[in-house]
Image (cartoon, rainbow, N blue to C red; front, side, top):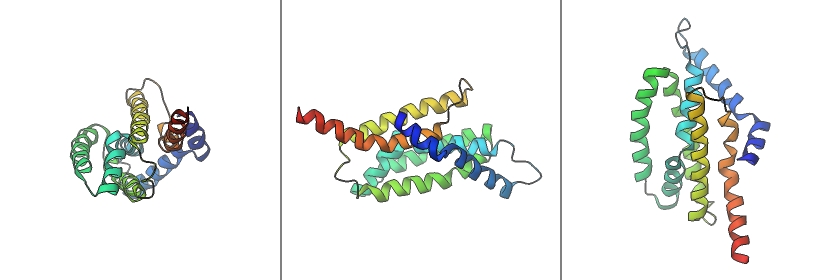
Length: 172
């Protein structure tokens, strides 16, 4: 998470997502009736991208062609999108764009990563995603503002670290 935060902070992923959300808000705005659009867009995008089902479903789809996890995730996301949209607004709908890109890239990259996607790696990525969801919860509840978007690279830094520590452990 720390290394991911450093990388994400250098790129400032959270700012880039907000900028993209603001651009969408301007394009879709009708007399300023899209209040909260960007916050809804960023929050929903992060929620739908960091969960274990997003990661495991995309990898399972890419490796085996089995889409059952992604179908279940789509149904759950659809229900939560209705709930979020009722309280946060239309920005939740726009989160479909980064989710499609993110999960598509994970699915397509699964075959390239096939040699390193052990159960341990997927578990650690899921655990990292779980921590990111806790951060999103803090943001939604306004307990503490955490730039969760900047922590996203931690999901992918978990891959080489898990492989390294697994090999070091097996070598002992």
